[in-house]
Amino acid sequence: MKKFNTIYRHIVEAERKYPEATGQLSDLLADIALACKMISLEVNRAGLIDILGFTGDTNVQGEEVKKLDVYANELLTNMMKQGGHICAICSEEEENFLPLEDKFVDNKYVTNKYICHFDPLDGSSNIDANVSIGTIFSIYKRVSDNGPGELRDCLQKGVDQVAAGYAIYGSSTVLVYTTGDGVHAFTLDPTAGEFLLSSENIRIPKRSKTYSVNEGNHNKWSKGIKDYVSYLKESDPGTGRPYSSRYIGSLVADFHRNLLYGGIFMYPADKKNPDGKLRLMYEANPLSMIVEQAGGRSSNGRIRILEIEPKALHQRTPLFIGSEEDVLAVERFLATENN
Ligand code: AHM
Ligand code: MG
Image (cartoon, rainbow, N blue to C red; front, side, top):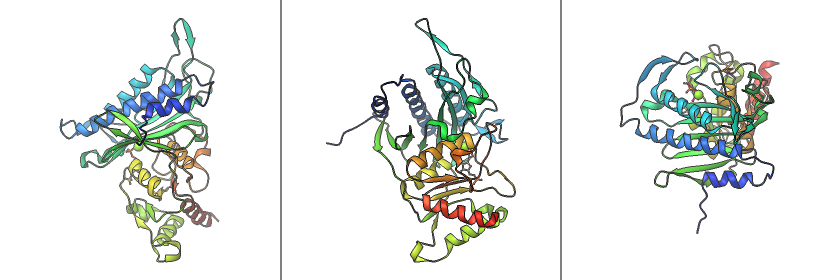
């Protein structure tokens, strides 16, 4: 009989490999999984209970905020505050980070060791159309000693992440995470209310036949990107071209498909967005940790995303992520352009 494993057991089993572990990271991941379960329920019910629509507010990116975004943001924030272990919360929906005090447990001072970044509901412009959306998260260890988290705790390089993951709310809800020891996926069984292990140690194909990019931006792209996308459309059976184009417009959904089947996702810089559109801390870094753990590659076209020194919480970056050989190919096209 197939052995079932819940996400919580999986996390705890992984923790046992490290006798010095305090359990804070495991608790934190379990809290995030619980929050994703609750967001999933709300996403599924959204059409029924008429909570869709605009709240009338705009977020720090100047975009319209929908009610589900607000719900997901508040839920994750409260979960992090309540669970302890976090000295600073950074949300894509908030302009500033939220520092949190250390605590006393049984009269003993306990330092909250971690920082959590999250994009509570990515792809939210797709909510009304029932298109898959997701939650992305990323966890770092604090660099300051104790007390409320500081900006330097929140602005660490992606390479310093201790865990990252996402939940995709699609035909099923799937939670994918890594703590630097492979990439594992869990599917939510709504009857049991549990995330059950569905794929362990996911590996992304080295080379793919699929590219994902918003081609509506073609006229705003640089020559290198235009040339690369034209190259993908040329016919050459030896290299598997032409590639197929797949673009959902929900990063988590595009990324998840490419992770499983192979593919390259691109959001390049363009004339309108000189730094690209996607956010380094909330989107690019967590997905880059996952893709590298799965044997893929991720860069801004020149350097590894995980090596970018962050300067601001809401910093944007061009993103090329997915199957290793495809990302290497686009880097070569961009290198020619820069020469
Ligand atoms: P969001 O965080 O406001 O939802 O925006 C990010 C989304 C990504 O999910 C997606 O990859 C991208 O924006 C799509 O952008 P575009 O509509 O410009 O193609
Ligand atoms: Mg987003």
